[in-house]
Image (tube, rainbow, N blue to C red; front, top):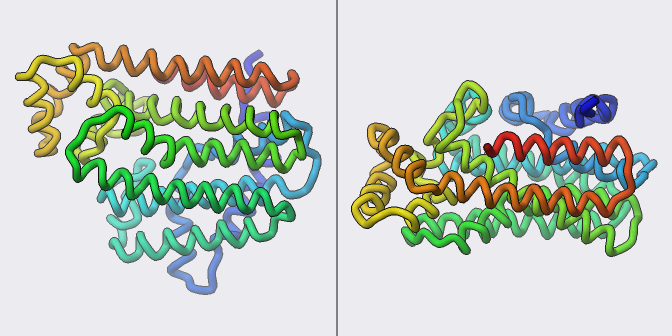
Length: 321
């Protein structure tokens, strides 16, 4: 029987939701209302789930796991709120984004409020190394945001820069989720490094899969609008690969359509990207990272929790094809 990652840690995830609600409560009613709007909008909680599963894979028995996992989810939520302001995204998790429902000022300030709540929770943790790791990760994520702005302004379509950005913006928090779980479990340096490598590789695979679905997914299955990244001017790997693989005429069309961001060009853009073989190449790349994740998990002792982590990786593999 395939083990559901969520069923195995149902009690922990239920406690996580309670701590999340408590954490975003403020005497300023509007701060609670706006932050609750995104926290309660049905995110998959994949990062805190990884933290809980990895700590349990490494036999952690203490009391601080839920506070750590909640801090990770709050950091993720804050980055989403700020992301949406920067990208001017209209939709987040199937509903209006915060800055769209309220305005940019609300988006920025409530993002800051959620960050501060994450840091309050982090301060409650007894291991200083965990606090340092999360602070460093938050810094790298912010640098990734700035790098992405540079990337868009430069009109460059470089694969190396794309991986640098997703390494900081997405994979860094996945890595923090697993590294801090390993530090909490008080394991040796080698195991901490393996946990970090696993989290980072999973984060890259997660982002590649997400970018792939923007051009090849089915909206009813993914809940994500097809072409959203393209129309928002986000340079992702399917587009970069397609520009490498197409003739000048099609490549020029892709670049000018990308610059315009007009929905009426989208059907042709997707056709060119599919015909170029870019989708297949990104699928291969995603598979290489998911295979790496499985190999890294082999280094941990077998348990129901490790099986759950494997299920998450396999789920990513399936969604990328």
